[in-house]
Length: 628
Image 1 (cartoon, rainbow, N blue to C red):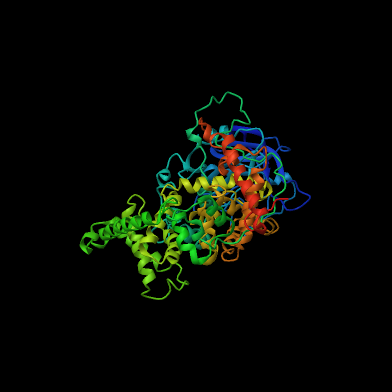
Image 2 (image 1 turned 90 degrees about the vertical axis):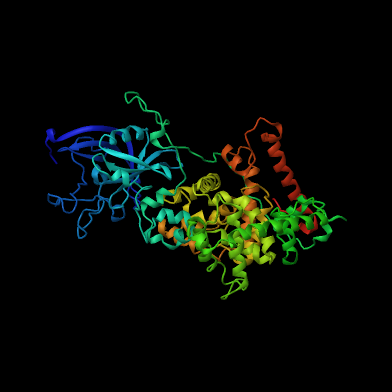
């Protein structure tokens, strides 16, 4: 196709950019080497890619049309050059037939920058930088892999024509706006981009993660899927570099590659133990717990029988100190009871007129009343109307708002309280046990969501070490952020297991054995249990979410616990475990003090392993894992 040289201007060009076709035909290459260019055609800036075999300045096979309503006619020779799943230009009429792929040259594309909606910078596990571009129609182009670097220079060239505004939730995602419009002021954090009932989807995601995440996935767009990924350093925060300097392939900002790089060795077989069923035998004559560590180990191995669960939970959740006597616990209960009712009186004594002038308290009450009405209503303790259990649930949550003004009430906290209230059957005790639980997970509910992003990133670190192939598959389906695990981590799998199972799971996690992030290993165990279903099927982002959501109440808790412990043992026995994995597992904490040195951390882990193995050899292997 000929073109007027005066109408063509090359602004930027980079070789060694591979287009990933995702082709399912065995006779087609999955990646095609080529050039990425920023050009002006008749004064219209565009981003173009063409294969290496077409190294001239010919127009690419994929052309574009003007938006509906604009002056100009649709290009009658439009040829998408790739399969409909990769369609990226939404302005082509719907009745236009797609032309099948015939050769690599037909993968070329040209997209006017006015049609560019967003771009994401990321990295596959193989270490290649790549960009995913999305048109204003919401369709992603095939990923572009930068084998020789150059993403920073490309973005700098694009910024001559458009504004790239980083997402406030993800430094790797950039939204494109023209320089001469007010669109920038309506960016993701300022515009109700996905309005529904007066509240944008992301805000609702933060306020009600499980309802939004799994209840409205038909409204989740490519943009939102990208926005909830773990944060990385934003492009604009990096110092400017002289464009005349040669690009360095490994000097790409905002990327960090985490792979195991070593053989992990065989995964041990693990057996679960019997639940802790005797409590009095662990108390001395004055009521002190003689061996708290042994109690925790037994709870970790098998949970607690219902008859003594209430007593043990108060120690696990910090209501009573492990070294307290029976008399001291009576005093603690009396003091805590007085303190609880003083706080309860604070909100009970607020008149309706006062509350009308207190929007914060009014908002908390509204959220709590709504959540209480739908929390565990299948359980007899909370079922029916005018149930006293619902009143207790409401009152404890309202009092917690007085206890923690800064946090107040956030949706999901009712899910944490209901099992505690069910077990303790006591308003005061359930409140103080809730405060102990919230000490462990309160950061999950903070508005910034930094703790949740960090946990998703840590989960990704673990999964990459355990199963790089699964990670690559999830990445290829735009699910590498593991955002579908958000609800798991937020409320510690409360909605994934039966009510009876969650009692066991939580008491196991409250022991903080074998590491504080054992809940992340639980998530890994669940994902690995679904590995065959995920990789062996033709899943995409939406169907992955649907499949994960449908696991609710179908998971085998004991199998998941065995798998999680086996994963831990497999990782800690690896002599060349990556540093970041060690940090997630608590095996290495950077510190100048000897007690926090890597050697001392490793020794503590070895002690736990030795105790586990010793426990397995005794009591008919009731309490320890059996390692081959």
